[in-house]
Length: 484
Image (cartoon, rainbow, N blue to C red; front, side):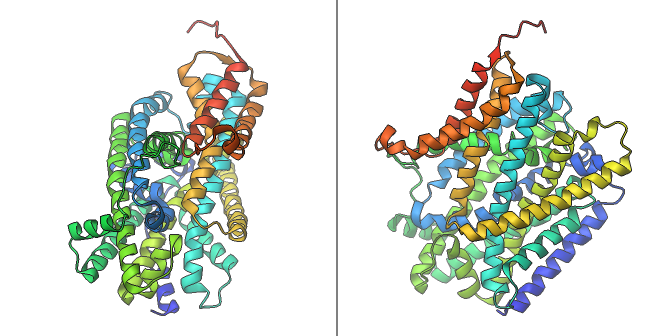
């Protein structure tokens, strides 16, 4: 399959996205950009959020990790389900009761202005790093297998993709993304299913035959019973629950779409549906990963990790499957990147610039500022993706979970302190406390062999970070003597 033909299909796919954006972005204003005028259909939001939650990292990294980690990632996914239920029945009632546009307004109401600004700042940092890591993986795949052959430099590929995202999110924001994410999630899941069916057919396996072959090769083990291992099942289930609680429930990008739903009951349906859907879809991705390893052994493919799926799809499958893979990969890319830039724009405008408080600003002025912020984040994304290219991490999914552990921990501590206690904070020390917690986690992780012996810190680093933050906030707080 020629690189030029593959690129042509990418252009056609993007043209379809622009058409959807033009239709859905009509008569948009700042409120439709930020929260879709609170009129989004919960089923569309739920389906589209599958793509946002998974991204290109899941599409490439999860199948690629099966050769090394077997089906251990399913342990984390079981924890995800627990996290989604917690979001649905603990956090969403708070968000809807307060009628929030930004979820970090909760921190201002409960813990004060400094806590609010600190929480929003950590979101901006975390989502910027996480989204650019996801974007880098997909751009890298497109670059290696298509655009290097066309003589297009890496920076130009990244710039063009970000320009594409800007074009279809510039006006409509969340109002547009609800629909484009639905289209893109469909493309990603179709790619997953079609590639799995092809490999099963090529290997002359039924589903049960495939599972038996994986089991014989040690590829389908789900639960790790080694207490000291990073992938010990209790660590991963509990860690997965907290990852979802923070990366979804305390994340403006994910909640921005969810609170665009008409009412609390529908929003809760959305969360529960996503939880069970994620469990099913990630199981399918792991199954595909096992099939890819079996197919690689048969075809003498030496690629491993993040390179395994792209190598097989683009070099060892028929041309039509190469096209399907590229379109599915693009479908996995856009929901995570477009939603991130939109959510970062919303949080920066609302939380850090205080746009909603500026009553003297006319709607046209607010729109211009919002558009400039939107463009600025795209430029920031470009620079950070180039930094990731320089670092060239071999497993982006491991990097993402590490970023989440360090940057979402303070958010976890802030929200937990607000919900679980009634104490008042000394606001001037909040930011310092939230910065010190990740530093303590870094020291603990660096010296873990000396301090903990054979015990390895895994997903629980996020919980430890949140706990350090919580304890620090307790030390700078006092009893709340005001009567409710």
